[in-house]
Every structure is written in structure tokens, then in C-alpha cells.
Picture (cartoon, helix red, strand yellow):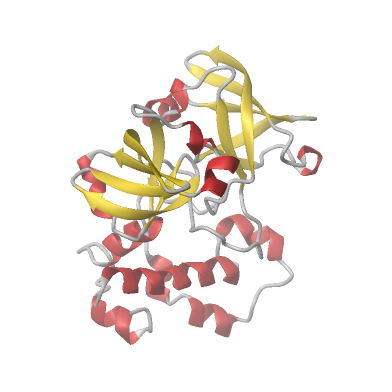
Amino acid sequence: MSWLFIRRQLSWAVRRWVWSGRHPGHRWRIANRLPSPTFVEWAVTPELQRLSVDRINLDAMFTGIIKAKGLITALNRQDGDVRITVSSDGLPWSEFELGESIAVNGVCLTAVALHAQGFDTDVSVETLNVTALGKLGVGSEVNLEPAISLGERLGGHLVSGHVDCVGKVTSRAADGRSVRLTIEIPSVYTRYVAKKGSICIDGVSLTINEVSGNGFELNIIPHTSAVTILDDYAVGTLVNVEVDLLARYLERLLSKDGDNISLDFLKGHGYA
């Protein structure tokens, strides 16, 4: 039984959870359109409903498909925290509301003020310590993705906006019309990285080509280079990394704390 096969089955389980209305961030949006209990019970078994996964918050979700690039136009430090202003002409800001979740370089942040061309957001000391946002300044470009709404296509993979670690670009080379990048991450996170698996780099959903030691290779196609900040990467660039949350689900499911969920349980319920 391959890890990737189980991952695909779990992927559909999580997607059915989102669509079923049990995704907490979308309950209010479908208050009058909930599916029947029979469908909900089929989509997510009680055991999976009880499953608790560390550091995964499903109040806002993203897909790793960047909607626009933005520019940091102001940065004000306030008692250790930082308030940044992000401007972009690529999103319909008049349709946004205060409190919206927006991923900035893969970090889920809250819009505390809206402008005609962008928004303000507060970045806490904790977020600055565990992400690469603290390295940005006025004039820095960033990737932007608003949280998904119920019914949107999941073009990339499920992303929480909770960065796991900071990685470093260790090589960059041309590969035909594409660019091949190698990124190193702390060894504790390498167990979540698999060849042909998904990973989120500065908010961009990407497929891992190869894994070697603490590093992995990515192929950046021309379109991705054009619509994200990845084209600006050089050796030494620090990036936000979020591992595939389904790898975390799988680890917890198969751990001793996973409510006694085993491969036999997954097979018996159609997930493997």
C-alpha cells in the first residue's frame, strides 16, 4: 500500500468534509443548504470527525493558487508587532470585508483595514519569528491569495496558511523554459516531504520532483514564474514552507494517538 495512494484517498475525505459543511469557516455560508445527514455521515466517519491534528486550523483555507502579486507600501512597527500595508491592482478590493483572511506569501493574515488598492494587516511577533515575513520591507513583492469560498475549484492542494518552517533556496538552474529550484528545510520536516507530493512555498502549491537529504527540487514553469514572486528567487532566498497538511493527517492517523485508526480501519471505510 503506497503512501501516495493513501494520501489521495484522504484528500477526497478532507474535500468531502469541506463540501459537507463541517468545515467550520463555512458553516454560516451554507446554513440553509446543508446536505442530508446521510451524506454527511458517509463523507466523514465519527472516528475521522474526532481526529485532532496539531497546528491545523480549518477556519480559513487556501489552495496555493496565487490570485495576484502585491507590493508592501508601508511597514510600521508597533510594540514588536508590525502593521503592513499591501497594495495590488489584481484583486477586487471593493468586494472584501474587514476580517477577511488573506494569505501573504503563504501566511494567513487578517485584513484590519481596506483601501481602494489593498489592505492593512497586523503581523505578530510569533508570526515574524516563525516565518520569513520579517525579512520583507517597503517595496517587497508578495504573493496574495484570499481564502477560498464554498464551491470554488481546488486547483492546487489544501493549504491552511500556517507556515511550518522557513526554507532556503540552495540552487537555481535553467531547465528548458522552466527553472529548477532546490530548497532546504530543517530535518524535522523532511518526513512530510515525498517525491511527487505537494508542498506550499510562499503560498504557491507546487509538486516535488526529487528529494535528497534535507532538500527537495521543484520545477517552476513559465506561467508560475510570471504570476508569482518565485521568478525573483536566488540562492540564499528565505521562503515560507507549509508541508502538505494531509501528510500530517496521515501521521496522526497512524500514530498511537490516532484513535486506534489503522490501515485496516482505513481499508474498511474505503480510504485505502
